[in-house]
Image 1 (cartoon, rainbow over the protein chains, first blue to last red):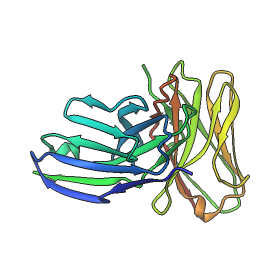
Image 2: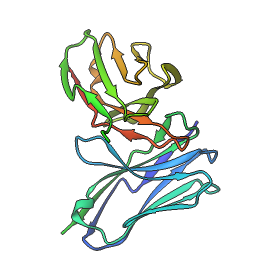
Image 3: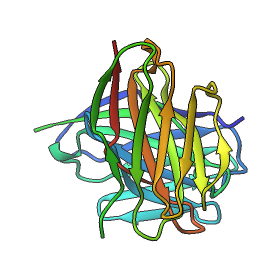
Image 4: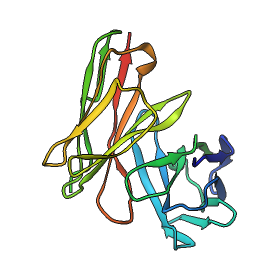
Length: 112
Length: 112
């Protein structure tokens, strides 16, 4: 059974700082790993998807890496901004059939 | 291109009643997944439909059911509502072999 853990649960940083969010998963036979952002009371916004065969994906100030052998993924946010404040969730999927296991998320606060 | 649309956005029910939630996926997406999000349990997978067939099912009681129509729109039903069913119900659609999930804004159910 896949289990996903995200550490830390909460993080507060000053604006402009670079930061790393961590995601660990127990079953390395994943199909893909996806990072999401969730604002309070809203749905999930897809940030990055990393396929099993890939090591990293980049989009703007975001970079996500995947290390299946160690069961870890990281989301790197460069030059953080107050607008980045949200909860960040990672989800590991063992198939492409819509079933993903989510971590509990890291709530990020970026202070001006 | 329109995103995933969920209706209703908010609803209040009393214990013992039943509720039906609707999800319209992104045009061309044939996979629809449902998730329940609560503060205590986080995001949990309910079920996934592809071409009107349930492909995956999570560990929820039989009171939770769903279906998918020929136009890929999906509904989920919860019968005999309990207080613990209060949650944000999220729908996600997916089209590609990559399995990337795109979520709607959710339906927030409050059971009194």
